[in-house]
Length: 116
Image (cartoon, rainbow, N blue to C red; front, side, top):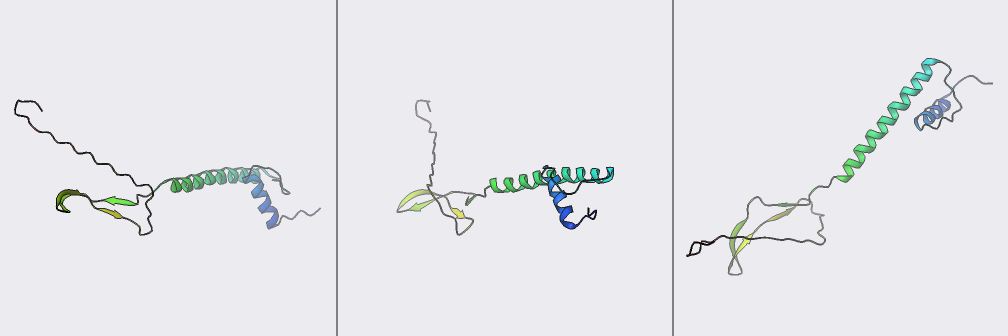
């Protein structure tokens, strides 16, 4: 039986420990090599969890496609006073689908008899 361990055997052993399958042509023969294999399996599993978390966190974050102006202005539009707000697309490729906009205006006035 051939006792030399090649790169292919090391790779298959590393893959078997990482995926926790345990099926490999190579077997750790000393306590040190068993310790190295276990530490490698734990580190790779934690690395996979970290990379997966970073990847899906990045995918789940959306950037706003539109930025509103800091101030609204009242100006004339078609001969009538109008409240105007400017919006800016952050990317030229941005496409708006099903845009809805609502504006609520409230005004308090003092009535002559003291009610509001």
